[in-house]
Length: 172
Image 1 (cartoon, rainbow, N blue to C red):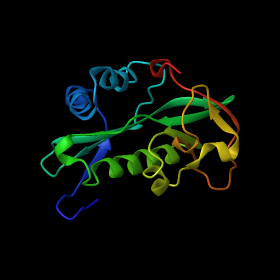
Image 2: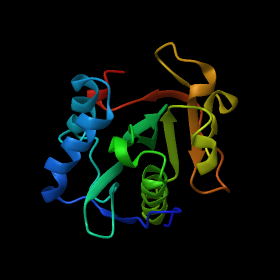
Image 3: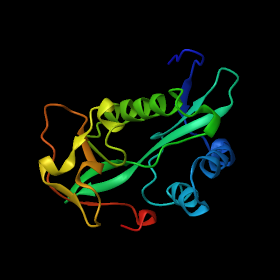
Image 4: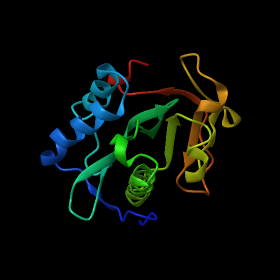
């Protein structure tokens, strides 16, 4: 995907990428605890091989990543978009957006049906996410209603209702 000054390449994460991803998380998040949380999702039962996508520049430098992990909406298996991270000097260049789109495309290609995200309401609708509460989807912690969003990857399927259960590292 091209931005005015960048052409981004996306691919599935490999084990060789883990140190660079940790460095991206450490640079992108405000606290080490936030960076460690995203790192912890790689060692948990929530990990799904091929649904962590890295963004590189044309020279192969890793600049960002997006990670989809397992969650449930009620009893229905779903995915959760974990916090997306981009090196600070590459933020607002499209590096995060291209990783999100690639991860969602990979999930859809695998037959996954639903994705949730807890994040900035002005950012995620561009990917097709809408307010989860409109479908009876909630979360067990107190968050602003507009910050919990959901997406049906198969537009013909209605979203399930229920409480979202995240992977253990999220602590929710």
